[in-house]
Amino acid sequence: PVKEIPPERMEILNALTKGEVKSIEELISILKPKMDKTTKEYENERARLSYHIKFLREDGLVKSQKSGKNVGNRLTSMGRVYTEGSRS
Image 1 (spheres, rainbow, N blue to C red):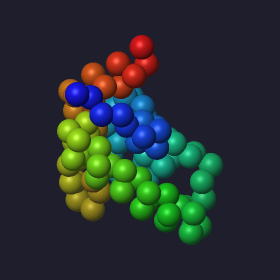
Image 2 (image 1 turned 90 degrees about the vertical axis):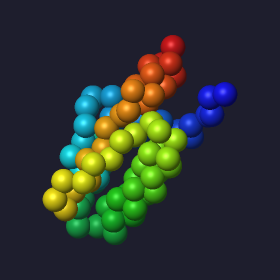
Image 3 (image 1 turned 120 degrees about the horizontal axis):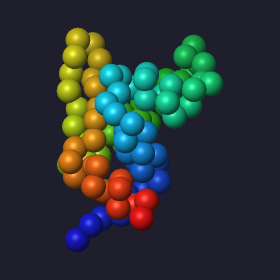
């Protein structure tokens, strides 16, 4: 059975359909381009995205790869199928 993905996680999956993001900062710039990096809100957004990516990774929808200090994230094959199916 296919489990339902919460809207917060679908937002991340949909952002990743455009290709791999090299860092959480890049993902924030895609999802919330006007967010100021110097604010507490930015730090909270980093934590929120990391939290949701962890579950997407555990569900096999996202693959993460460390590169230096950054962790890149991309959709897995299953993640691509899931996002394509959710748009139908």
